[in-house]
Amino acid sequence: MKIPMIHALVMNFALLVAVSSVVAEAQSANSPRELFVAAGEIRVDGKIRSVDLTQKQLVLDVSSFSLPDGKTSELAVPKSKIIVLNEDTLLHVRGAVTHKVAMADVKAGTSAIVIGQDAGSGQPLPAREVALWDKAETGVFGLSTQNADSIVATKPNNQVGQKADDNQAVEANDGPDEIAQNKASNVFAQGDFELANEQAKPQGWSYAATQNIQWLTENGNHYMHISRDNPHEGHIIGNKLILDPSWKKLKILARMRVQNLKVGTEEWQNARLSLRYEDATGKTVDYAPPLEFKTDSAWVTRKLITAIPNGTHHLVIEPGVYGPAGELDIDDIVIVPNPPLDALPIEDGFPAGKFEKIGSNGDPVGWDLNDRKRIQWLEEDGNHFVRVTSEVAHNYVMASGLFKLDPAWKAIKVRVRIRTTNLQVGPDPWDEARLWIIFQDANGKEIGPQQPSPNLKRDTDDWVLREVEAIVPPGAVYLHLSPALLATRAWQISMTFRFSKSNPTPQLHKASSRL
Image (cartoon, rainbow, N blue to C red; front, top):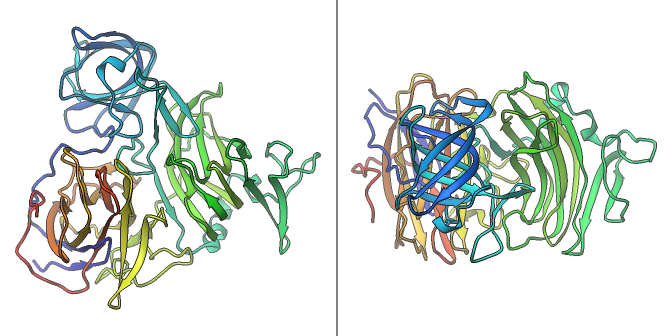
């Protein structure tokens, strides 16, 4: 069978994708992806009733459970479950698997999500992973410990460590036009800020009377201007949308502009449109990934496709400057229920992977460079590529691209050239430079086993080649590619994934190979 090659370009990493019929070697299960439920496992959510440190056990009052197929069942009345811990159990703050927790810090009353081998109803659950938190605010989870007031971890934005596999945060490639294309299906009429209430504020929006929040007009168009000049005094505006029970997911778009932004030391301290799911009583159910900025930007359209968690009554919408200082302008918030996924087809030669064509948002077409400070579009010897850099240990930094698979394909071959500089990895198997390869179904849900990943664990003198092969699981419609630096203990790491423009035929390097 002739294998059509898919050429592209990503991070001092050079990558080719091709259809193949060869069965690939599976990736190691030692992956940092938070709350991934493998075959034969079960996920249980609830609150810890009691802890026995001597027996290394805890009792969890389970409120819901989920199976590997993603099906979740809510319990009308919580049911107690014995959770068994051992030295291999990964205990961490929810939202960041690298923020590990000592067993002595596991307390009664703490919320927890447990993943482990399903031994059946009424049987103890041996825990492979336990995510813990006792506070959640504005998309940030925290846990009180003996050695510190709290460990705070940001909820990932469709990255390693995210439960909501249906979530996708990207920038629109066609700017304001996509806003116009979706307005006919929009269910959030107050997102354009055009109508006034009796208090001369935009209809439906609440905020404090302050010079830091202004309802402005530019060329006859209304929008909101939110500024912050005091790191101890935040400013946001708020609204909420009641959700129809028939809605399973939402597409959220917004036009945003950011100026004079100063970000804080925490990942969430930036300019963003925060999105929070609440139940009918106002209790937080979960957070959607925010539409966020970490550097200044002209007007661009950001968008998100997010799954609605069970038990949700309404969506809270809160744009604001959450960092120490900066200005956020926002307009045309559009919400479309049950939308189709947005993905470019994988065309012959994979032109999207060459990174030569740039969308109106300044990103290569088909790709989301969600952190302009640490993810850059560069040129070298006439060739464009994307560089991902991390200067802080334990961070996850990654770009993202979503592409539609040819339904006739049974497998893909990924060939990648990689270049790394000052790469320093820790002891965990996943501390490396990597290209995530993820298959998704028609609804954007991750399916199939974890895939082999082209990767590197130390510096290279020049571009090097890695190649892996992966079976396309039944029901796969989309291919999600994510060049990433995963939890490296590194300073000034710079690496570039690059999908090659040529069609080399090197010796196959399996996913387990290392330099």
